[in-house]
Image (cartoon, rainbow, N blue to C red; front, side, top):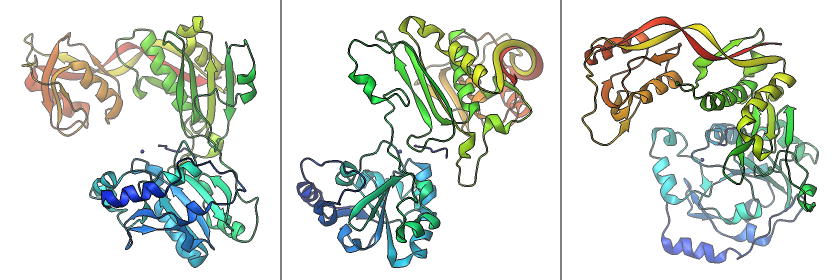
Length: 432
């Protein structure tokens, strides 16, 4: 259920003609509404097809699924093979039509990439404005179900299964769970009647839920005070580990801890790690029962304590207890082997490409390398910078796979990496 909501070619004359055929103002359709004639008859630009335009009218007698997608949406791309298999299985009884608002040039570039070539056979509506206006949504993939000339439902992609399609074709209206996407700008699940109240200010709001919410994607957002301080944070459809990580990151920042927070600064000492990490199912989605949603808003004057309050809430409402404490732990230490600073920058444009191959720093702080190694490399222990080098640096390493290999490559710069113990601040998570 973890969704990663994730983000060919016609003449300008034809594009302009299509825009002229779209009504100036389109009203969003509700479930049960008849599909307007404009939707059936307007020529739609398509890519990877033998035709330059199509209309939905030719499939009017079928069950039509509009699959809204984008090139940057990995979940959307992963769904394509399954969608194609379903369309083949049900033959001429259904039509699954991918739809994207992305432009000709964006798609042309995408289909020339290594990843895009895998999907260069997928016929899709492109440059869409009209369909999204009739079927508005905030996240993708988003599926619109049309049958017998009506909008019968809107769902997430997980509900596009052979079983559900068979039920819908058989006339079962209750086969699907309607997804009407939530607005992240509002506090999670706060009733809209709140906005009707006069002279009322939201000082504090908290909600904590278990189980996947189909109406909103995985992720979160921030709430801000009038002076731009963060006084609220929302998380949706995430495993608990992701929430602890986000809170730990912010607490490290607020505590002015020298090193940045990373997974390597989380010490998880619990028996059932699945309860915190979630179970990842085939296809890249988490088991719904392993997902949580949480939001906390505090008064503006308490904004500086937001993340302390959030950590206390998770400790109060979950089976775990977490706190930041200083403990002696194994780590890697980055040290100088010579007094001379051999990596002092010679200037130029700032470049920081860690942890790519090769990895390069040019006129960039050494902490860029340290932070990247701590966050995105196979080196399993925290890396601590004890070189004392404060200015910008120039250095280059061919590959970062182990601390030993990194140390060998840094030797020419008068640096080394050793395994030692230090007292470090860690986010320690235990069973209650």
